[in-house]
Amino acid sequence: MSEDSNMTRLSIVRGGTEATRRFERLVRPHYEMLYRVAYRFTGSQQDAEDLVQELCVRAFRNIDSLAELDNPKMWLLCVLRRLFIDQTRRYDRTNVCPLVAHYENPKEAVGLLPHEIMHALALKQKGLALGSNMLWDCVTCYMCQEHCPQGVCVTDVLYELKNLALKHLKEKAA
Ligand code: SF4
Image (cartoon, rainbow, N blue to C red; front, side, top):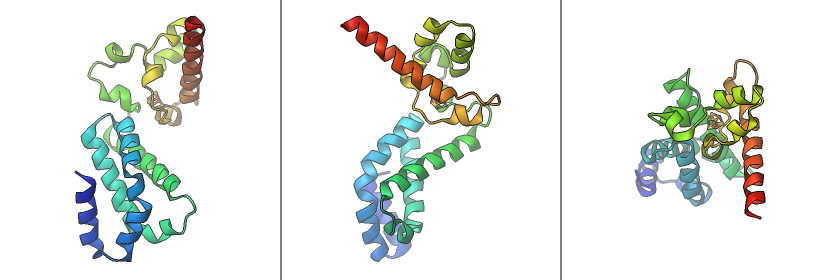
């Protein structure tokens, strides 16, 4: 679905009024960025388009409130993330990581999975954890952290490990 078809659909819904002009001014400039973020979340062109379309409908319904915000871009990003989380919860309540769910064979694609990285760290196998491609693929969506039954800050740990891995790479290259 293209941006124009989204706009046409929304214009019909609201009759092409002041709301449409506000939508053009407040949402359209961020459309490409929103699509890129949605693609990072979902890993799929179709899912990213669906997510952004849902966000556009939500934004259009709330366009008057959006117009009063200092930073509508932040609102759009927050709602996009919320929609993605809701969608993932609907689709899969047990496997919360969208990347793991996305791959047919996740271990082959990324190496150690998030919970395995946590286990490796618990066993003091930091080198093993640092070697997982999961560190580079993680989109920092916080799903694993929000759902961890043991309250482990999984996303924060992955982020720290990624910084550490980057540091090692830079030191090697120097
Ligand atoms: S933050 Fe957690 S759930 Fe989200 S992509 Fe990274 S590992 Fe997966």
